[in-house]
Amino acid sequence: QVQLQESGPGLVKPSQTLSLTCTVSYGSFTSGNHYWTWIRQPPGKGLEWLGDIHYSGSSSYSPSLRSRVIISVDKSSNQFSLKLTSVTVADTAVYWCARVARFWSGYWRPRWVDSWGQGILVTVSS
Amino acid sequence: DIQMTQSPSSLSASVGDRVTITCQASQDISNYLNWYQQIPGKAPKLLIYDASNLDTGVPSRFHGRGSGTVFTFTITSLQSEDIATYYCQQYENLPLTFGGGTKVELE
Image 1: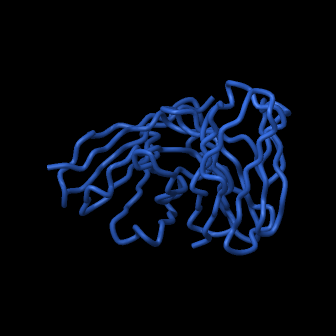
Image 2 (image 1 turned 90 degrees about the vertical axis):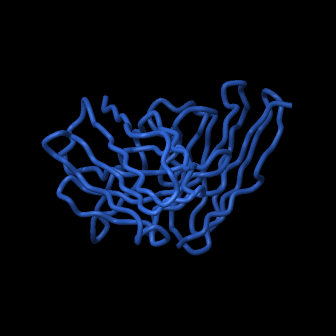
């Protein structure tokens, strides 16, 4: 059973960069059948997909955050990371790393989230 | 982006009641829709994929149906452990988008 664990600072100052890492255990990080994704949830609000990455390095991002988000992968460590630049208080949220099953429909596409980390609350405040 | 509109945003029901949630997509998404359950303080859990298929181990009181732009999620007999927020999610197009959630509470 794959396990995912987020790590990183729980407090970030406005205008700085939020950096989180997700460590994947007990699963094949390089199986090829999944994307690795970041999803966030502001307190009391809904879920927002930030972007995802395949172990090969190909990535996709939410258009609303594309200018501020970078997701990278480190296959040697079974980790993937999120960087969100120029944060504001609106970026305060629980950040989840997760695994997304993918399927072929003329091209590879994400399908559903089948495993989640426990989530990490990141507060943006001075 | 494909907008997913869930209704109602919250509801109260009694144990044993039938509960129905609607999710409407802003464009045709075929059956590319999933439903998740989120218990407070926990990560969401996949319940239904491809609009109507129960994930492994999900109780049969959960049902999903629909295609195109309108989808429904039903709990045929609400149990106390079903108290949670439910989200729909489309995967027709990137970005993946979720509905705003429906909070199910006990009366």
